[in-house]
Image (tube, rainbow, N blue to C red; front, side, top):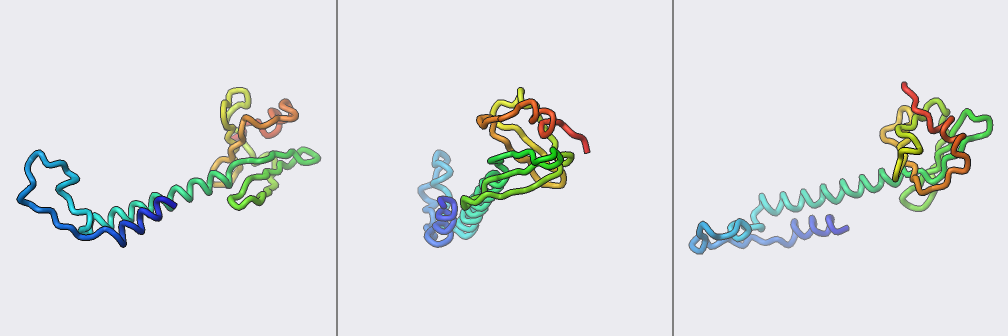
Amino acid sequence: MFWSYLGVFAFKSLRDAPVDKSTITDETPWFRRINLGENKYRNTLGTVALVVGTGSLAMVWMYTLKSVRYLILNKGGQYLTFVTYSPFGNNRIMKVPIENVSCKESRKLAKVQLPLKVKDTVMHYMLDMRGEFKNPLLFDSTAGLSRKW
């Protein structure tokens, strides 16, 4: 929200205010020498603000989609169900064969988050280590294995 407001402000409200060249000396700071209302500064500042805002929103959105709420080993032990958060409060559910899940770090070594890689997906799923492992040995022998593809 802040970055989009800053971008719109830069595009609409920055006015051309020419700098008086007679008052500029070698000791004048750089910000007193430039005119933020010039097109090159106004457009650059507005574009950078909008890109940073959009990029931040995309990163937060992707992190939300890849945060695991529940990891469920289905009956029979052949499939894992990932229940993840979504930005608007609903759950996303994905059923994956267990051979397509690789744990990138040992559960005992992970301090904050445990990355789980699902084959043919873009990013790692993040399992919060503050959560509860109902059966740690079962996790270590199924989802907690490091698999090579």
